[in-house]
Length: 197
Image 1 (cartoon, rainbow, N blue to C red):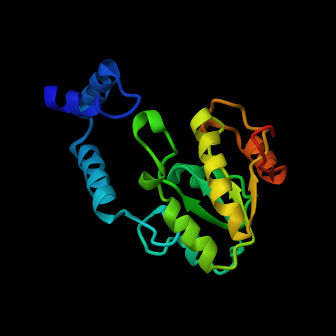
Image 2 (spheres, helix red, strand yellow):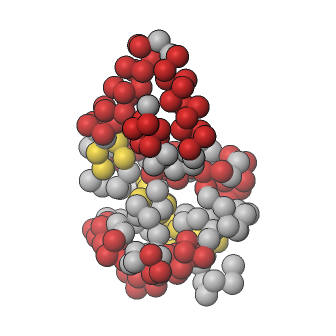
């Protein structure tokens, strides 16, 4: 029991009390429920891989979005994490392709451009007929810094660089914003300039 509680507290957002509640729930649950959970975790680690095109997490390579011939190929929406793709897809408002950075620039934490999926983004823009790159980083200090860095890196390549509209609340993550706010942000995106809008 102590090992399980200790393991559960390592999950984000799970404190000691929550871990204890989960452990006691599993103790009372039917063995099949515990086995299903254990198998789901095991399969998740075994079957999940990174899409070689966009960097999203997937069971197939390329991922279903990259493999879909109906998706617009001239637009890329750059996001920080795979869960941002799922959040934006839920709006039904965006029909292009994605690029997942797997983080954001955070110099104080030792996360620079080399730790992110930026080199492959530049290669995608150079090697394809990309006309617009939409920066969909979170509206935080690190997200804004990442967007500014990407804009300066991509604009010399002759691609239009825009950013999701500022209808998104500052200091929050995409995953907690409502679908309506995200849909408006996609529809009202604007050109990234010196950070004033």
